[in-house]
Image 1: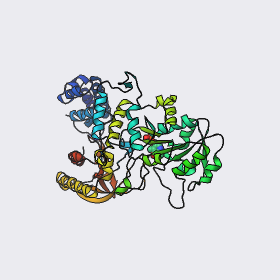
Image 2: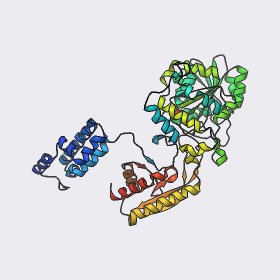
Image 3: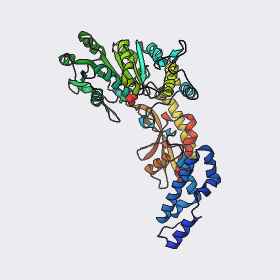
Image 4: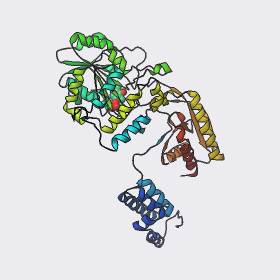
Amino acid sequence: MYKEVGDVMPPEEKNGLLRQLPAVDQVLRWAETARLLEEYPRGVVVDAVRDVLSQAREAILNNEPSGARREEVVRRVTHAVRPNLKPVINATGVVLHTNLGRSVLCRRAQEAVARASSGFTNLEYNLTAGKRGQRHAVVEALLCRLTGAEAAMAVNNNAAAVLLALSTLAAGREVIVSRGQLIEIGGSFRIPDVMRQSGAILVEVGSTNKTHRRDYRGAVNERTALLLHVHMSNYRIIGFAQEVPVAELVSIGREYHLPVVSDLGSGSLVDLSRFGLPYEPTVQEMVAAGADVITFSGDKLLGGPQAGLVVGKRDYIERMKKHPLARAVRIDKLTLAALEATLREYFDGDAALEEIPTLRMLLRPIGELKAVAGELAARLSQALGGRAHVWVEEGISQVGGGAMPTAALLSALVCVEYRDDLSVNEAIRRLRFNDPPVIARAEKNALALDVRTIAMSEIPLVVAALQDAARGN
Ligand SMILES: *Cc1c(COP(=O)(O)O)cnc(C)c1O
């Protein structure tokens, strides 16, 4: 429609182009955009058209008339109306990718969310008694049976669980914790900061690499509220290092009548070390070791929705449920629905390892990964023709989400090197703009797709995305 002009356009030409710009109403009548009105609220589409037309005007004034072409306007409007939160294809191989929403829900959890969201539920209504009930009841018995604990509750996330535990049990009093465990989780969650926020007073003991039983004993006084153990989920101290195990902290706690709170972080319910993954203490082991309150995430190794789970001794948990903060950090019904369905998967022995996507991806055998990579590489070679060099390589995927930092999971990477002069970084950028976006990484000057986190059903979408990237999107 418009000619491309690289140099400065004469004013009369600019004015001509500006006059040719369609009106908002006109764009809304184009077949391509009219379709969007069926899919999205009218105001959303109108706003997008307005924005895109004003960008087009701006572009003409900046001597870039191509931004006003009909197909460009349609492309931009289509892009702009899409939801901000959208599915992406995770080709990074990082299973618990915090930026990509950590755990993918299992099928039954997805169905439970759909059911719980489409009508009323007995969220806080005891159907037997015909009166008000507790939302914690939805998962409490399940959590107790799975972990062996006396009582349980669920909140919004593990950070909230730790904050609630400290606020309830230690506000205005002292909490003893090893220096080696004063960790930062990311997103500014630091144990000392959470402690301050809760009103508890941090008492650090030991040194970065070594803490002994006598260090805890020496710090106990009449102001002490509890002993805190924080699992070093996202880093390790190796070499000359020692911490006091939870079972021993518990015995010190018993001597002085102090509870032991354990922030377990990842919160695995199955010991994955029997499949060759690094050993992580399970929630059951923490309960058996005698910890009074244990907190962990719902969406890390558990493989459920974002949630903070608390299990432990009834007295402490009941106090936490009644604390005013509990209301501020309470779990919502959709999360609760997904959590219940996820927990139920663990009642069928090793079936959880298949049904729960996080566990399935972590345990995907290298043979399967290589087969998937071979398939993807073959389809890519065919689709990209002479435009790219495609090959399969062994690589390493990470667990992510601050879990098992030392785990190096052997995986299969599909590597792509575009011929032309499409750089790896530009290709990665284009994949991000794809619909759905594909998140890939660069490895040794090639674009690398780690198939661990790519579902079979996503392969055609990945192929199409790489093909479009080659064409310049
Ligand atoms: C991840 C983690 C947290 C924070 O959990 P969220 O569910 O992300 O709020 C707290 N403590 C430890 C030890 C963790 O690993």
